[in-house]
Amino acid sequence: MKVLLVGSGAREHALGWKLVQSDHVDELISLPGNPGLAELGAVIEGVDATDVGAVAALSRIQSIDFVVIGPEAPLAAGLVDALTGLGIPAFGPTRAAARLESSKSFAKDVMIRSGVPTPMAWAFDHAGDAEQHIRSHPGPYVVKADGLAGGKGVLVTGDRDDAIGWAHKCIAEGLGGKQPRVVIEEFVAGPELSVFAICDGTNSLLLEPARDYKRIGDGDTGPNTGGMGSYSPVALPADLLDRVKRSVIDPVLTTMRADGAPYVGVLYAGLVLTDDGPKVIEFNCRFGDPETQVVLARLNSDLFDVLHAATSGSLADIELRWSPDSVVNVVLAAHGYPESPRKGDVITGLGDVTGLVFHAGTARDGKHLRTAGGRVLSVLGSGPDLATARANAYEAADSISFKGKTLRSDIAASDSID
Ligand code: GLY
Image (cartoon, rainbow, N blue to C red):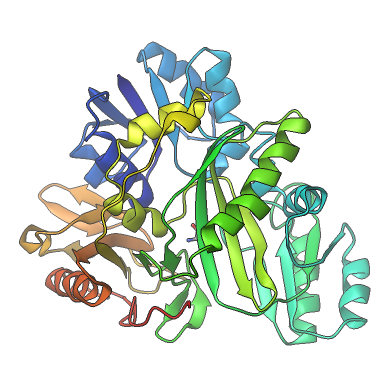
């Protein structure tokens, strides 16, 4: 099979690394890919992944047999619809189903109709109405731009003026899409957990859970980022995943099917483990980054078989096999990340690393590898327990150098969910 992989981050490098291990994958092509993916197959640059007509036409010209789509933007733009319209199977939700991520108010409506435990929420199309709501409720406040905002659309704050300012900004600047709308959500406290379900429209298979670290600084301080590290497995109460499948994933699949938008792809549920049980604070329609890197490093099953079964409605025939090992991922970010990451610093030491390293913001420049984005590399360590995996990840991270290298020192320092 000739497989096209859409995306350019460490998540996609991990997907590509796992896909080429399949006996069914003869050739991997990435669009736009990155220097890590370029070592696994050809890369196609200069085509915007959200130009769904162009990507679909190119897939036909290249005789692509199967497409795997990493990021949310091409999914929300309808890439799966365009590809399947040309008879090319693609792993990911259609544009209508991807609204579970691309519209917070749509997702909330589906959750409520499905009986999924989720914080209460109110949607506003006018900033004045949102302001009035905030003024008449106590904090903390969770204020979200309704549409896709590249991870920059959510403010959680105890400060009423900041919350009002954010609501105005979301509406005035059209943050989150062309149809400005803001969603204000009840604040719920507890540890956060990401759960990923592979779905075929009817059936779901839950992947091993992973934890990520969203803030830039140790001890969860400083601004939010795309994610500074992750680890798997996570010590969880024995029945938690089953409960999430029964009370979240499967009811949503039933509702989406009844609505005529069956959900095929990864359904990523962002949960808060409250005293009243898990509550969904968001859905994403894709694999998480940096969680995917550690989850796929532990997957012993053939990833192509799993993704193909999801697109052909035969997930019920698949059983996932996992390594019992722990895996820790330390993200190396560029100087100035997340506000203004610097590009162009020379990266050295990769050749000294024996474990897995997935590329994200890197670029080749002759014989040099340079930083080219905020999150530069995902550096993995594995071992029979979390402490060993962590030590191996940090040893590898230490042997890689570039000016301004930014990392957290507390990834997987404690497995605090219990
Ligand atoms: N790890 C957070 C995300 O992928 O959105």
